[in-house]
Amino acid sequence: LTGPTLILLQKYVLDTLYFEFPIAIVTGGTFARWLLVLVLVHSGVAKLGAHKDLTFVEWSWGMLPIGVLEAVSLATGGRAYLHLSVSFVQMLKALQPVVLSGLMVAMGMDQITTHMFGCIIMVCVGSVMTAIGEVNYDTWGMWLMVISEVAEAGKYVLLHFYLRSKEYSLWEVVYFSTPASTFALTAMCLCFESDVYQHNNLLVVEQNASVFVAIMVLAVIISVSGFGIIKELGAVSNKILVMLRNAALIYPATQLYHEVVTPIQLAGYALTMVGTTTFTVLKVADEVVVRSQSTNDPVAIVREHEDEEEEEV
Image 1 (cartoon, helix red, strand yellow):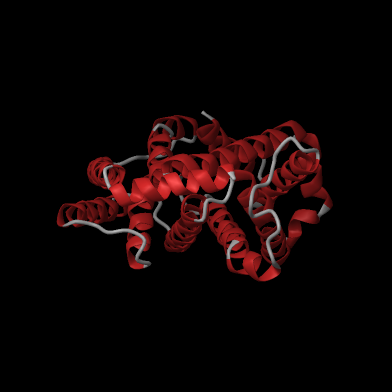
Image 2: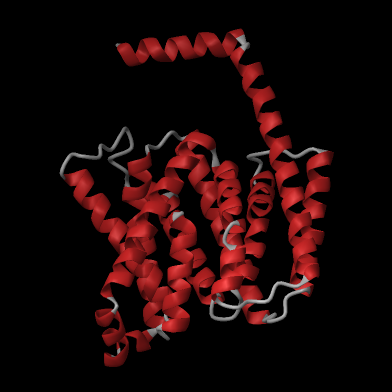
């Protein structure tokens, strides 16, 4: 429930409180996450692993891009809510698992079959139908969402690589990437939303402090739990869970904000969901086969045994 609640709260702040500074809102969330991880790590509650002593070059090549991509995704995704309805944005987010998989394939980190490619075509057709049926279609809002989804896919590819392939710990990634995303968002806030520091806007924050604190707390929970899911299940699995969560938000959005969802949009979204779900089933089945083969591989078993002996030594 944290994801839908966060989105509805952000929409409430943008529309009802007339605080039209989405970049400033998400900046507060990343800043809160940075403070939390600093306290947890330096108090000894959260432990950094083997990568606790990153060099500047290692940080620049890995954690810095993750932070910057997260900042771009959050900033453009937040600004999109000023131009598009909540329900339409959630429909567009159904594309994310396919965009992510496509990027991983392009980078040589994954492979797709003919059946998976057919699912991608189905998702693309469904997304086009969803856009055609949107009553309040806005080109600038669409471009913001495209940038947001590509940036988020890039971030998740890097997270998948460092958390699962390089075996970074959850707290290492959060600890080293959050400062980059915080500073990048702060810079974009100063460039595009400098009016947020005017007295009347700061007064809105002061008078509704509980709402803004709730947004920051929810943002921290969602981001850290998302990193954990990627660590355990992978990037694509995490985006599937997010897609299902977003689907549950469409009906409340139509009731709370009187948004119109046309029949062609529903048909397009249904097609997108079917395509994405089928794609996911195929991916999971393929991964199960790969894991079973590696489990039965005697060379892999010997290597794993040698690694365990080295750790004991």
